[in-house]
Length: 268
Image (cartoon, rainbow, N blue to C red; front, side):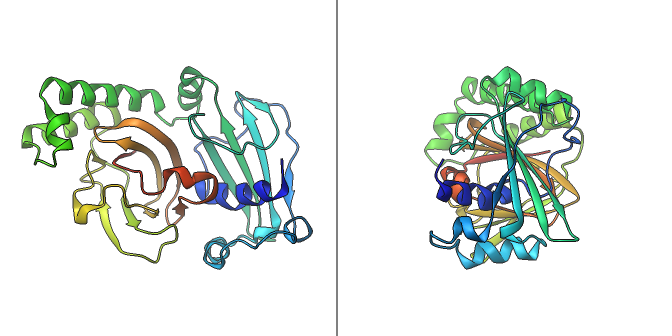
């Protein structure tokens, strides 16, 4: 793997999941992996990352030159993974505030079932999310809502009532917190609180026409898991993310394939 790809992964994967999953990274007893270290010497021959990206890391107490990254596929250590799309990615970041270093762990899975099992083992409710999605999609198809949505028509209240009932069935009565979205890969563009504990699922970014415009978001909560989709009614899964409140997820670098693609989203 070229050093430039290592630099991109180290910078972008950190914002892929700031502060990580709900596991303790030891439950699965994975074999030890070698850490890739991004240092000033390694990155000096390539253009530096955008200053605003470096600034986002610094604001979270991380020096980009002190990032170590590890990669796993189905629990086995592997070399650098340069493309997460369609690999059921799950990542975590643990930082050391004493020296501003950080360890990023990136996990991918070769089958959906292995991804679901990992969610079961770590309390991430991936399997419940899959069941929720299938329920919503079936309801939308039976009631002709897919065509209505694609045509930009207003959906009936009965759909939103059904969506709320299904969310409560699979995830509980309330969503986890607030989410603030931006129209750039850094959190300085237009923004609005578009998701809240009262609306933890959005089949459509109907607030200020956010459909296919999100470049990053900030979490305003204690902890949250997010599932992002390229189509309405939670179809065509893009990525699953999780992290602590106040952290920023930027659709840049290895997450660039998500930029301006989100049409629906679930918070848990």
